[in-house]
Amino acid sequence: MAEIEIVRIPVAPEQADALVAALNTARGTYLAPPACTALDIARGEGEVVAIIRWASPEAHKAAAEMPAAGVLFGAVQELAAGPPSLETLAAPSSGRLAGQVALVTGGASGIGRAVVDAYVAEGARVAIADIDAEALASLAEKYGDAVLAIEVDLTSAEGNLKAVDETVAAFGSLDTLVANAGLFDGFFDFSKVDVAQLDAGFDRLFDINVRGMILACRAALPHLVRSKGSIIATLSNASLYPDGGGVLYVASKHACLGVVRQLAHELAPIVRVNAVAPGATRTSIGVPDVLGGPLDQTAPEISAAISQAVPLGVHVEPDAHASAYVLLASATQSGAMTGTVIESDGGLGIRGLRRTRGGDDLASQFSGE
Ligand SMILES: NC(=O)c1ccc[n+]([C@@H]2O[C@H](COP(=O)([O-])OP(=O)(O)OC[C@H]3O[C@@H](n4cnc5c(N)ncnc54)[C@H](O)[C@@H]3O)[C@@H](O)[C@H]2O)c1
Image (tube, rainbow, N blue to C red; front, side, top):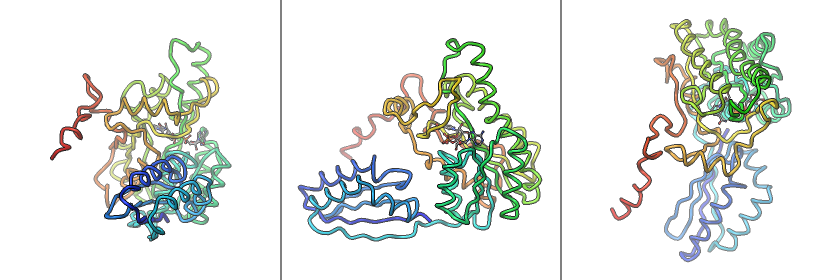
């Protein structure tokens, strides 16, 4: 269960700016994902108030023991006019998925992991199928009986059947399949790779992004028909626009859009099939060695370039997309939606020709009103 901490720090007016700056500095370290998922700082009369959303009490406790937390506590002690007051509340979760069972492929890290966090917080029991044993173990430790960790390679039919069978054996049914596991191609240039690299890279990407998604949907289908459940695919801005990767990633993600549309048609009216199309997100998504290997998507120069190119100026954390997955999993909230793609990409579809966005001067234009 996530929790919200409200910290009221009394402060003299001349120290308020420095205190806010200290809190903002901690944004990148102690008050940072995955433990801290949101931080709001407000200035009140004689006080600065920090409203912090922690992923869980355990994550909060572990973060408080980081050296960076000690640095912030020291700065607060120096700048505050008195001891801070603390209030901790259980984060409101409406239990929108109470009683539901979900299977999230590629749920051990990144966007899939943020979906797991949100689904557990909303009351679902969640099976996580992934090839990364270490990341699975940390989720199993964090959530105990609310999750089932399944170590499996999802590029084969057997792997996908195993994931579905183990989910249903443990939890009794399956309401939602989140088909999310995937690899990236590292933005390689078509003209700069040779034919052998392209050939091998095609297999690596399409095996998980497309074959894996189709096989997961088929393995889950009998159970989803029984539960009148739904499928949610993780697409991408690369499912809709060019340059969200190289030709292999863009082609594979366009193929996934075809899977969503065809299955939404074939499985109506019983099983809903929808998708979330995230834009650039701060994860460590894998890139096959044959296409150059890992790419640090969290590097400052990548964040700066993306913020410049995206109308809302954001290079988001994975949890920015999680609510869209909760909405689509809830038949009471999205029961009229199938074949829908929720674009969670900072507004790529409204990017301009003359400039990325029109509102860069809005704040200064209205500052006097
Ligand atoms: N990061 C982005 O900018 C971004 C943007 C749009 C869409 N996406 C999509 O989001 C999805 C998740 O990617 P992410 O960025 O969170 O990366 P990630 O690497 O954090 O998560 C992907 C997960 O898939 C797992 N996986 C990969 N191959 C597997 C296999 N053969 N069998 C089982 N598990 C396997 C990985 O172990 C990992 O846990 C992908 O489908 C990706 O295409 C990512």
